[in-house]
Length: 79
View 1 (spheres, rainbow, N blue to C red):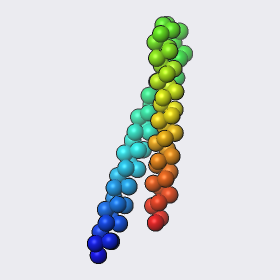
View 2: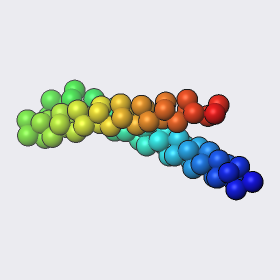
View 3: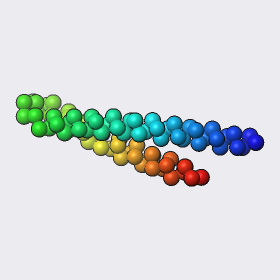
View 4: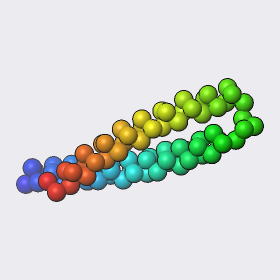
C-alpha cells in the first residue's frame, strides 16, 4: 500500500514538473520571438545587439534542455 502511495506521489510530482516545464518553454519561446524581432531593428546599438545575441543563444540551449527533460517525463507516463 505504501509503495502504491509513493508511485502516485511520484506520478503527481512528474506531472506537475511537466506542466511547469511547458510553461517555462512557452515563456522562453516568447522571449526568443521578441529577440528575433529585435534583430531586425536597425536602431538598436551593436552592444545591445550583442547582448540580445548572447541571450538568444542561451535561450536556445535552455529550450533544448527543458524539452529533453519534458520528453523524458512524458515517456514515463505509461509506466
